[in-house]
Length: 183
Image 1 (tube, rainbow, N blue to C red):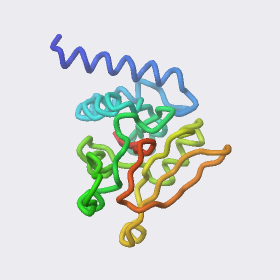
Image 2: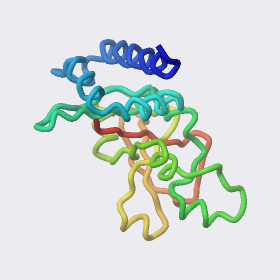
Image 3: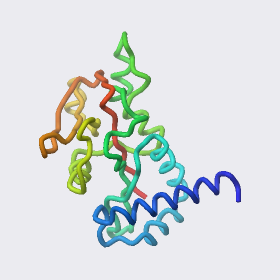
Image 4: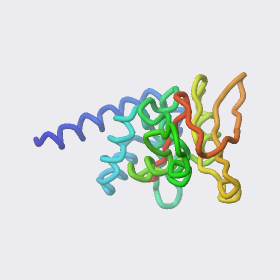
């Protein structure tokens, strides 16, 4: 077995364990169906490995449907640790003249092969557990908001999920992003 095959095998074992431990996140979906989707789309394994490596703890939060697709999402308790201190997108990063962050959420997600969660997906995740109690996560921002210089982020405080706005150029040590991967 090659080193890469061994890493993929270990990742699949980790994902299966997480899947079994958190069945309410994907009620009615069997691990075999997820494994079949991953076998049909082996490129997704590399993306899931990146999600795991950056602290996302990916798990299935939705699936099946007519096409049999499954939705993986970062399910770490807090915004993934290795995806924080990023401004919203490349335009925001280019506009910063001083104290530039190392990157942006949108471009980092694209490079990983994932997309920022939409507000709907973020709320779907929060319906499955309590996430971002100490951190916040950038979410996909509607073009009309982004055109005005803003970007959206969410968190959970006081037992509620909040959606906020901030300048797209801003970045904070406690703000990262969660990603979604359709397989």
